[in-house]
Image 1: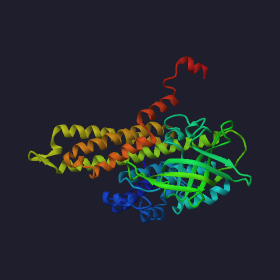
Image 2: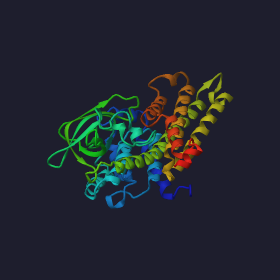
Image 3: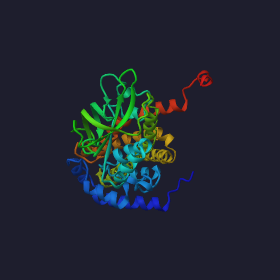
Image 4: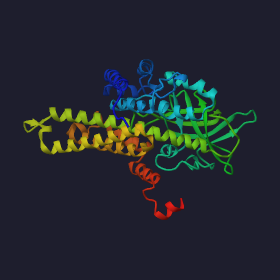
Length: 399
């Protein structure tokens, strides 16, 4: 393993940091999340046109940059530093890998080029608060009971006589679901007896589709409630007519591993910036005639935070190289962000406890990401289970 960054990666990091530094201050972020889209559309188009950000990990034959997921993780570390509100996570990290893995040749040719160019955005709609389970981050996603298992609830798909599909149901907590041009909806087909989990494509203008933006703890992660009322949909991939859905579940699990590595890098970027802002503040803030940062107790707390962040950064970089370790890296990074953001509020003193202070942006991101993709103890428990750490010798023989 060569852990050194290439000249191209360093240049991408420098360029992205320069652009975001000019356009993504705390005030600009707060203004962007309160727009109808939930992000700065002009900035998104700039990042798409100048850097090809949404198409970093898309193959060149589909109009992408053709880089590796590690490059996407590196870019997301920079977007995490400024808590950039954008469709990047929902589109490039969650939707694009699923379309690439499951889509037919015609679907890939039609969808991936506009997604890579940033003109088309997408969102993954998973029934219930089960995104981490669907992506196999906190538990196995087979046999698909996280989506209702064919029972009442979730989203149900019914094949029409014309060969098309109709969707019925409701999905909450869809990242960027209110503004995405394309929805990837996980739904059950076949009823209870022959239930199978499939993914469907739903356009923003589909009849019977109702979307409403929800109030969230972290405004930089906008979410929506999706209602499907006899909504026409297109099956993602070819319909073999069988009952097995292993391909869909495997694709979701693979997407979860790569997404965990990207999210870990993003959390590390946020934690590093929260620490840097805190260090800057304690250098300037004076108490008893001297800077707060000169007190030994404060130095010790900052040193502990530095160790947390650096350990998480090492884990995130390793996961970018080996996505199989994404779950553990995500747990390490989310914990580092939570601890660092909490200490940032404490070390900012009285002003840090005001809800409007910038330190709370990082604290909200830490809490919201754990709700969406964690919690940390379940991420670690599932990673340990997959690694067989708690398997008895008798069980290993049986396997």
